[in-house]
Length: 192
Image (cartoon, rainbow, N blue to C red; front, side, top):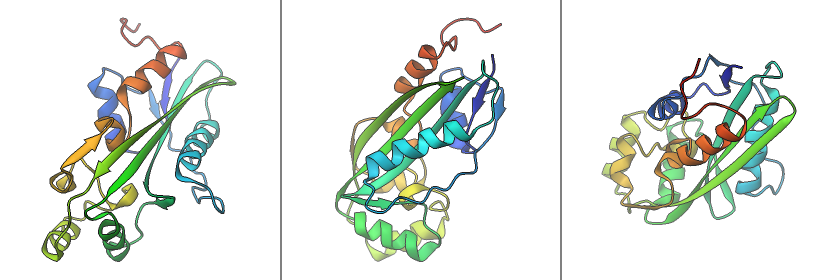
C-alpha cells in the first residue's frame, strides 16, 4: 500500500508532515477546474476534489488523497487570480466582509471513496490602497484561491476566523486523518 498525494501544493505536503504523514508519491492530476454554469461553491469544491481523486492513476491497494480549496463570497466562486488586477478585485470584494473558505477532501482506495468538506468563515479587515499595493507586491496571491493564503503575508489582513485554520491553508487535518484511517492508512501506528 502506498499513499499518493494528488496535489502539487507545497502547503498540503507541509500540513501532512505536521501529522507525520509523508506521501510515497506526488501525482497532481490534470483536470478541468472550471465551474459548471450556476454551480454553487460547496458542490463545486466537492466535485473537483472527487474528480481529482478519480483522475490520479493508482494501483487498487494504493490510497489516493486529493483536496480542493475554494473561496466563496456569497454564491461567487473566487478561483486563483490570473493576474494582480484580478487578485486586487477579489481582495477588495472581500475587504471588510466575511467570506467562506471551503476545502473538500477525497480519499480513494480502489473503487471506494471517502469524502468530507469543511466550511470556515473568514473575516478580512477593511483594506486601504496602501495595504493592497503592499500585499500585491509580495506576489503571495499567485496560485491561491481568492488571491490570498492565510499562512503568508495576508494573515495580517485576517483578524478573525470561525472554523478550521488548516482547512483555510488547504487541508483540514482532523478530517483528513479520519478519512485516511477509514481507508486503512496506519495513521497512529508504526508504518512498516
